[in-house]
Amino acid sequence: MDLQQNLRKYAELILKVGLNIQPGDNILLRLDVHGLPLAREIARQAYQLGAHQIHPVFSDDQMTLARFQLAPDAAFDEYPAFLTDFTEGAYLNNYHLLSLFAPNPELLKEADPTRISRWQKVTAIAGERVMKYVMENRVKWSMAALPSPAWAKAVFPDLPEEEAIDKLWASIFQVTRVDQPDPVAAWAEHDRQLRAHEELLNQYAFEKLLFQGPGTELEVYLPQGHRWMGGSSISPKGERFMPNIPTEEVFTMPHAYRVNGTLSATMPLSTRGRLIEGMRFTFKDGAVTDFSATAGQEILKDILDTDEGARRLGEVALVAHNSPISRTGLLFKNTLFDENASCHFALGSAYAENHVRGKEMDAEQKKQAGMNHSITHVDFMVGGPQLNVTGVKADGTRIKVLVNGKWAI
Image 1 (cartoon, rainbow, N blue to C red):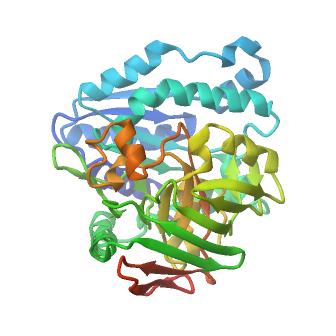
Image 2 (cartoon, rainbow, N blue to C red):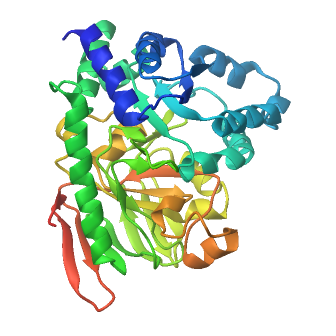
């Protein structure tokens, strides 16, 4: 594997497909030390494409861990307002968000979970004002991953560190299609296929979806005016961009108050330095009324207790079980990858783009339409080879959507 050549191809993919950089665009670039080689290549190519400014926002795992372990307790009660002002100011000045992340799934494993919970709530509340720019696609934004030694060892624990990093790079290049001769062209075709599913599902205009599988018997109503999305999104200027690299999903919003039945997760959820395993939920009138987990139940409870909306669903996503990520057979211990191996739901906030009037309605109108609101959005995986999904139209017509985890439409 020629790492440098693939990094150049990856950078080109991120800029031309992920952000669709146009002359005059600026980039707000989030990264850590592991992202520097890729970020430097991105900068060279971005300026060649006509970008004006790239502003790096740097983070460091060890500094983050030190804060959670050693900072005074009061440090977790308030988020500096000027940081929110800075982010909003960037968005208002034609900056678009690129997040390069090299996760450490177990970074906060030994940190105080109450501090983690408090800080997540504080940052979520402080960030509500700027989240709308991303949730409503007012700016272009994209996320792409690269290995950290800790992540590589988490995915390939039996390999030496250097070999694990090489193998994780190879896996990333495979599922993002960077290993193909022309990744940009490959993504154009992939986007076309995802949007074909999106168009077909929107034509069906299902009243509800029925999920059936081991431990799952769930009825999910969809709001009137719901809209399926898949692949690329569109900015206010009409420019297509790809928020997630990789992505294999077609998604919409469930009705926040009309979900009933039982639901079982089929993959662990990696969050807050821990794995939540064996999750099971019972829903009544849209809300989680009972839940359990074989591991990490206290973390799951804390997520559900974030606010009232955290006990309701904000996203339902369909992913074929034979997707490229699923075919790797790996648990990436990172939601961006694992959610694209499997059908999934999200607890918490819905995306405004998933309703035809989502960007026009005020908070009360969104609630009346069945759109969930929360300061959190946590995806968990429910798909697999035994999952069947049936769409039911308003006249009672039933259409098989997924059979044994694979597309039937």
